[in-house]
Length: 411
Image (cartoon, rainbow, N blue to C red; front, side):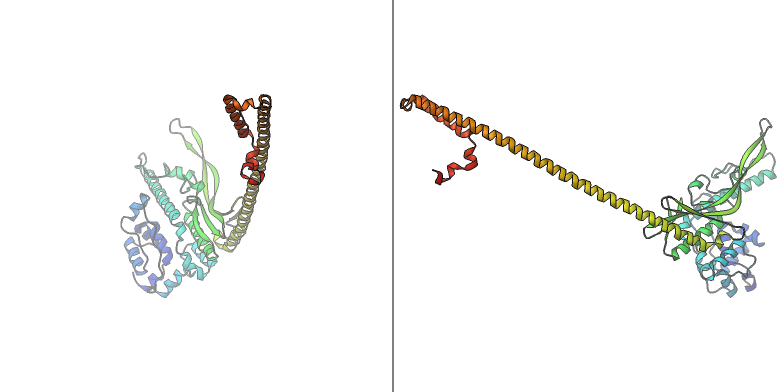
């Protein structure tokens, strides 16, 4: 099986994707050979394969992401050319051929590596696809064994294959309205490859790429602004009829059918988005120039929104500073007014105390004039007179204001 002519018939990247998408025996059926031969070919082409127990972990939703497919130098030249995106291999799937034509030989090798931002999403979708595959096998088994029920898969997102089909065969159904990818079983690989291409190309043009909001959107950020990306498959509403097993009545069931037509949404910060979709003459993979132009356009819109928001925040901050300064000045003015009022009240109080002191002194003088020298002989009067004048001095604020007692020039 290691004959060069046979090895050259395999697309190395496609083989890598196949062996990580399904067990070896299923991949062998696709190529018309055994799973053992597929493993030998992978060894010859240096294609890494899942370790033993990998598919059990996939079923439990705990499988790790596939490793990167490293370039090789020991395989046949024709295989290396195919790994770089050669279109000479007509057996490759149509989307891969279209992608190679659209991306060009220079980008093809880079785009065959999964971007780190998509590892988690890809693993989730691969796990859900494996669950759907188990539902299909259970359905086929029940069709082949009328009247019998296949043991239920407690880890399945849907109760049955029919239920899964009625819902449009959408993966990650419990959260698909919030995820970056709303894709069916038949389109999810193509949708992931499209997102992968956008990740790599956006990074080449200076964007930082990552998942945002718990993998709700693919975020491309640059210069303080960002756009969010999501891909969705168009579904067609329909109706099917089934027989009620209890009363044998005919009842209708609403259905969604996948179309395989993808739409890409590029959302800017705030409001506004651009929608690009598959056309009859051109798939999204062949519109990458338009996709990048739309990303730049929406990024400019996001940058404007960010600048407007920053300007509003700046104006709001300046207005806040002005309000604080105005409040400070008002408090200062009120403080000065209150201080002036307190000063006036203190002055009136001082004047009143001075008036009372003068009245006491005048009263003592009047008593002195009436008693004459007899007042000097009365100890009781003399003691009272000394106390009265001390009270007048204590009330009189003029001594404190002018410091008369400490100025020898005033005697």
